[in-house]
Image 1: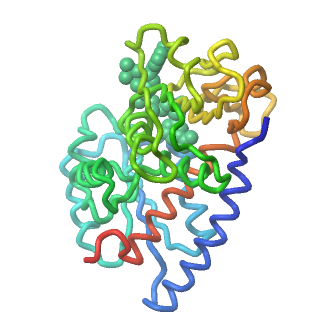
Image 2: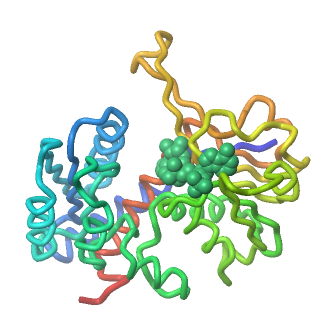
Length: 294
Ligand code: NDP
C-alpha cells in the first residue's frame, strides 16, 4: 500500500501557486483576492473558512471574510453578492455552506457571477464541466484530480465507483472521472443511498471514491485487492485526546482497508488539504483570467 499524501502534494502545489501569485502582483499591482461569506457560527464551517483564509495569506493572496448573523435576510445576502460581483478588485467569491434554512442555497449559488464562482457550483460552470470546456471545477473534485495527476495514477479504462451523489462532490466527481481527459477515461458507476447491492458494486471497483459522510462506512470486505481508495469523508467526533477537542474520521475504515489497497488517502491529511488547493488554483486562474477573458 502506498499513501496518497495530501499534505505533501498540497505544500508542493502551494509553492507553485505562491510563485504565480507573485507574478500576478508584479503585473497587475494587486494580489489575487478571494472573498468568503460566512453566515452563522457552525463549528465545522468556522474551521473550513479559517483554513481557506489562512492558506490565501500563505500563498500571497488577499482574503476577506464577511461574517453575517444567522438572522441575515436572503435579500441582504443577495445584495452583498451583487455588490461583490461588480467589484473589480475581487477575483473569487465563495459562500460557505450550509446556510440557515430561510436562505435558499440555489438562489445564492446562482447569484454569484460565474466568472468569480471559484467553488465551481454555479450551473454555468457545472454545464461547461459536462461539456469538457474551460470552467471552475468544484474544489474538492479538482483537488482529487490534482492528487491523481501528481502521483501519475493511470485512470484510463479503470472502473471507478463513486459512493455519494452530492452536487459538490459525488456527482461532479463521477462526470470528471468519465470525461475524455487525464485523469479521466474511467468507466464510472455512481452509487447512493438507494443503490441495491452496494457492496457488490464497490467490490467491482478499481478506484473507489467515498463521499458519504458516515464514519468508516467502506469496510475491508467491500474492497478488491489492489483498489485505489480516495476518502473524501470528514466526520468530526468530540474527543478529549486532541488539542482541538475533536477527532476526524474518514468514510473509509482506513486501518482495515489500507492493507488491501494499492493507493489510499488518509483522513486527515488527504483530500481535505487538496480541496484548499483546488480553491486556490481556481482563484489564481480567475485573477489571471485563464477561464473567462473578461
Ligand atoms: P451529502 O450529505 O450531501 O451527500 C452524501 C451522499 O452519500 C448522498 O448522495 C447520499 O445518498 C449518500 N449516502 C448516504 N448514506 C448512504 C448509504 N448508506 N449508502 C450509499 N450512499 C449513501 O455529503 P457531501 O457530498 O457534501 O459530503 C460527503 C462527506 O465528504 C462528508 O463527510 C463531508 O464532510 C465530506 N466533505 C469533505 C470535503 C473535503 O474537502 N475533504 C469537502 C466536502 C465534503 P442520497 O443522495 O441517496 O441521499
